[in-house]
Length: 79
Image (cartoon, rainbow, N blue to C red; front, side, top):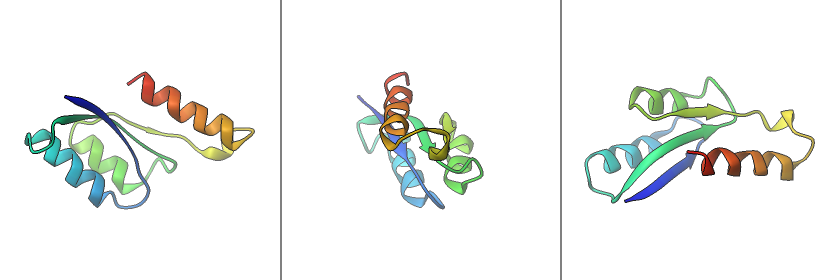
């Protein structure tokens, strides 16, 4: 089974479909983390409602795009 992390923005309809497909066994994977850059994004709320851990990180909190992307990779690898 593959471990899946999803990066989201917005409503999260695609993320929700992927999570539900994994949970139903239609995809050989497990969504282990959903990440976005807006804590109040509906996509993160949907993931939490489906029992998936979420994390929101503001890219402006980092000195550079590389630092932000390194943070995202760390979060994914720790999930």
